[in-house]
Image (cartoon, rainbow, N blue to C red; front, side, top):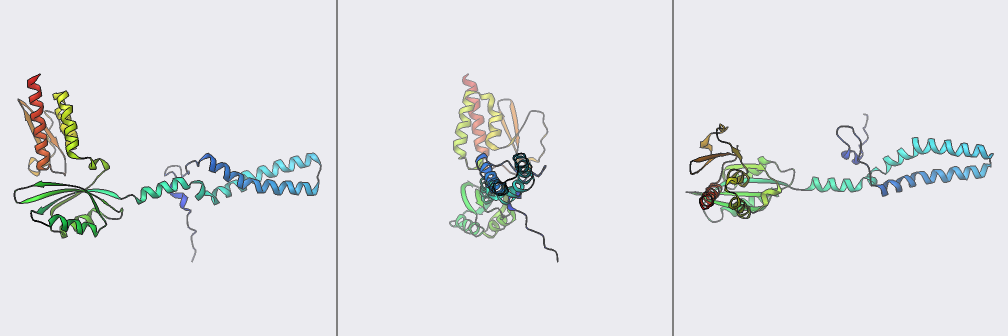
Length: 272
């Protein structure tokens, strides 16, 4: 059976379009070329000194031989052999990216009793998921917990959902998250409130930014059903704005913040 040679690890850095590797650093490239060329130059000069050919023949021999060997044989071979060392900074950076945990945003409904969140944390820990932030929204007969967790790249959303359900959670929703999800919600709300104080007409865009939703301009038809919690409407005086966030219902706390911002904008507008 024919065995295929393993591909060099450095090939992971190749461009997907042209297949070329990134240009290595100048210092490493210079050292690699010196390491490849110096032994060849030394051997050729030693041979010339030993044979003592005529001067013109010596010049021609060194020029042609060095050019052919260095450009076509030595340098390409050295670049392949030393590829891992030449591109080691890029490879280390790629390793850090590959090893970085994925961030997930979880929304789960739990029973309003002591130990429910602890049980959820234990089941997530079994998947090596580390809880970074927790926000608890009080409902009538339960609590709605919203978490941001960091998990290894191999942990799938299905595994996270299963862990939450095994912990007694219901209505589990999991979305990919970014580091922006780690920003404190109260701090962000205060910053946006200051923006509205400066200009009450910024209310629609400010609320959309706060909720991570899409602003529906007046007359724009909603693309979702209002009954699934993904459509929020705000009224101020005789004006109405709509906000939609598909597949991610607004929490009671988010709805309350949006209405308080609308009240703030109305108060500032009356004082102007």
